Length: 220
Length: 233
Image (cartoon, rainbow over all chains, first blue to last red; front, side, top):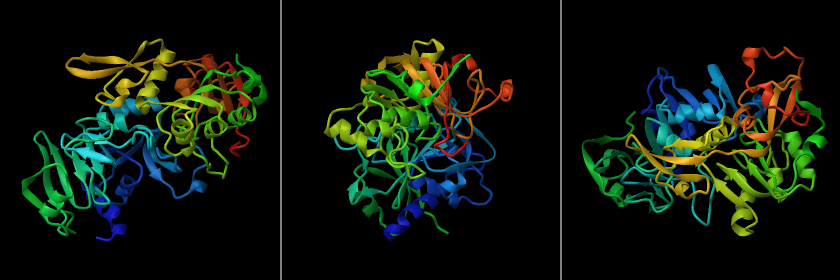
């Protein structure tokens, strides 16, 4: 797979996880590509933690008179039937279990479903923003990321970086595989046919159990 | 009834070493004109409580946007916030120069901690941050298990002064917020000893219908006319 195709490929597969009517919060970067791959009969309500229920997209600042940004600070808009809320209301929504799915990237994910994505001590400390609340509160937590960091495994037995949240991830979707987090560890449920199961395991530090229903990713 | 003051008079209420809440999310809903005046003043050693550190360049090609101006000017000594990743100056001052203390708090916790500070509550019990280094934060007062589930007890937060942005403000200080500009503003309005609202538009009494008031007049001490630099009036 060409490098330029990876993000779109992952986003396309993630889109299959969403259902019509779901309330969805998207992280910055790759997750924002997901809505364009939703089928016409699947409409989701995008929640932006800075205070939008029913987030629409715009291309540039000329569409947004500085009054509407998304959670990444980029110009944004609201769908008909949407609403603006304050930060306490927004996070009550998130922690209170009213968000069906959150999709976010990760630096490390481990076999227990713990995620690290907000700080590299001594090097980078961007901050957790709303991620810790989303991981704890959303009903379905999907990590969408490249399988490795330039060949170095990101799916580990145990995260080495400080956690964003522990035992919170439901599913990991990469350009190589779809992996479910179960009580017994990680379960490989889908594979990209460009890679063998052995190659996927070799790119993954944590041990992968193979689902009896293992199937190829994203056909069609 | 709040006092209508100039930007300069409002900025003069903020002194060295004060704790200041600043509304806004990546500069959206931030009192930009007040920050410009503060950035031109000599006030220093501030503790800033704000969702984020904003960013070096603004959407209208501003040089440093929102609170990023105060950080750039080394006027901030302590920053209680949720995200600083888009403002590299913060990392420089906190990790290389050691002149800025940054306390990172989960965004939902920060919102609720400020709400608690304004609502007379002693703190907030939240599942967010359990098992993470947030447990070691000076703002985390401990861990409790309730009905079998773990929660962190996060401190309530108050400030000496809150500076917030209001889209439409009436002479009594009632506020209506346009678009996504409310974010932390209505919460901060309740949690500081002195509250200054920078009004994008000041309207006659009765213009904002009582059922549309989002921040109630009783919280507001000072109103300043702003919004001009944003080109939004």
